[in-house]
Amino acid sequence: MMHASNGKLITAASAAAPAAVNEVAQRARHRIALRLLPYLFILYVIAFLDRMNVGAAALQMPRDLGFNPGVIGFGAGIFFLGYFLLEIPGALIAERWSARLWIARIMISWGIVTALMAFIRTAHQFYLVRFLVGAAEAGFFPGVIVYLTHWFRYEDRAKAIAVFYAANPLSYVIGSPLAGLLLGLSWLGLRGWRWLFILEGIPAVLFGIITVFYLTDWPHQAKWLPPDERDWITTTLEKEKQAKESVHSYRVWEALRNRDVVLLTLCYFFGLTGSYGIAFWLPTILKKISGQSDLRVTLLAALPYVAGFVTQQLNGWHSDKTGERRWHAALPVILCGVVLSFAVLAESRPGLSIALFTLVGACFYGFQPCFWAVPTRFLSKSAAAASIGLINSVGNLGGFVGPFVIGTLAARSHSFKPGLLYLVVSLFISGGLMLAVGTGKNRVR
Image (cartoon, rainbow, N blue to C red):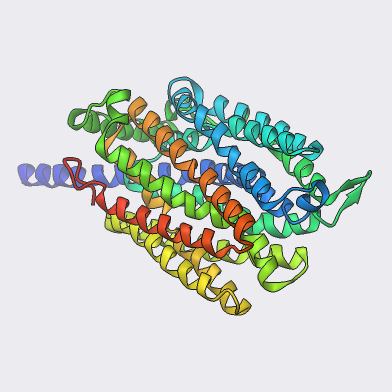
């Protein structure tokens, strides 16, 4: 009887141990997500308001300063040249120094430079300040992606990125109506578009200061986590890192030459060529199509991003549930190209055209959460940070190419159709490249 009783006790204890670990894991995951994701979400909203407000300002700025579409397109895109130059160093600094302090520095710098945009008078001043805004913001996005790898397991990473990346479409939902209201201001002899830059630069500075005190670099430093939860997440992420290094141990420059890193970089470049080309010019296109007031146009411009928020969350959730990444990233981009081609053909029918542009946003924003879960699947530490920096920096050059090509072609042809068709081709190429990722030795589902 004693032996039988002891056996039952051992069996019960063995069953209880995994249950206790699982309970600690659930608590830790919930607490970390609740602590970090809403705050990072707010930071990204501020980042995108400052990055994209030039699209709304373009409803007034060209008339005030005498800029043609080519000037606006080049100025909008030159942001990404400054961004490109400092992106990889910024990602490495976030990994090797302090993501928290680096993110804070970035926010304070870009907030100050954004406010300076209010005082430009010439095209060259416009180009210079936009370049400096891009240089100031460089490293923010890869810094946050690197930061998320310090806190979230691979199994949870697409959902975490989806929550963070939700700020991308929702920043337009918030920013478009806000920009429409600010464009109506006229204080102290300054037009609304100037106040738009001033008032949207201030929050970046304030939250940059808050970030220093609110974020924690690593789980083992987190006094806000109970000891058992802190130990669980630290141990879990350390095992994940060791597993990746035992299979794929890359140095930084080896990682940058990796076949899949190159494919992901090109995929992101062509995808963002399409995305930013649409985003920068959408208010102007909708103004031309609908003939509505600036405020109504900015409200219409928010619709694609409302739809994008929904598909982004659903696709990220389903990708984590199934563990599949490639098709979850590729299909949204390909569908985006298909719907955009229909939107171009429906140019003369305002209602249908607006509905199709809304679907364009719905398709595209399902792409990023699944896309960004891929490089962290087979790379770790500095190799992952450098690769994320490379993918994001070169990819974001699409943010220069897309607006610039549309602006240049619109100035020559007096139509947005040629530029939009160029974006359609870019989106198809992006989807095809995504499907090629993970077909070599680093298998990615």
